[in-house]
Length: 185
Image 1 (tube, rainbow, N blue to C red):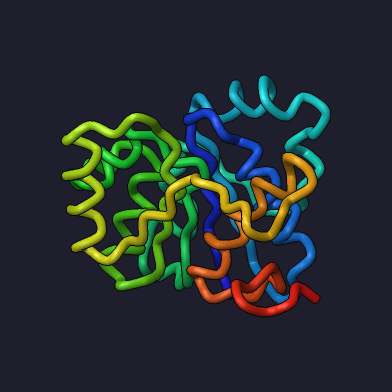
Image 2 (image 1 turned 90 degrees about the vertical axis):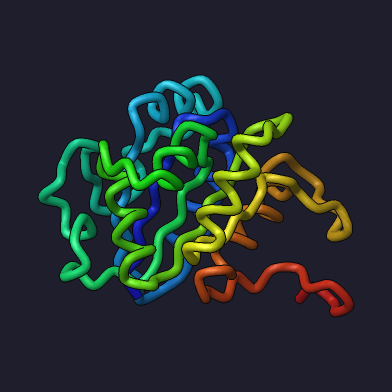
């Protein structure tokens, strides 16, 4: 499976870090990574002891339209934007492919591939809700960065994993995470 992971500029890069850590445990994946301009800044603020350089994934600049996932012929299967800001959502909802992240999202939608947006903004405005409606009608899935508590997470990373694992499962990956109504093994 070929997956694009875009790290957006919203606060909540812990979700991206936990998601990338989980991806390192899953075999047979080809991962490409791209960061928005503000993502690197937020990463340093929120994950200061976790350098991005530790991840062995292909990394592309957000203005690199030659990246393979900037075209449907690149044959990528899915994309997760984690965290996804309101601005990124708005650009995707309105078809503004003004950076690699929004272009890749546009490709996922036009090719009918899986696109998951881990939206991390609060409170929501009517503009956010309308943009969510638009991308949902186009085929994307909004996965709000709202952690669950029924698994009784015992750390910040475990709490963040309730969101990041859900995003991975929405693209068809088995994270072997807690299941409602079943024992977590």
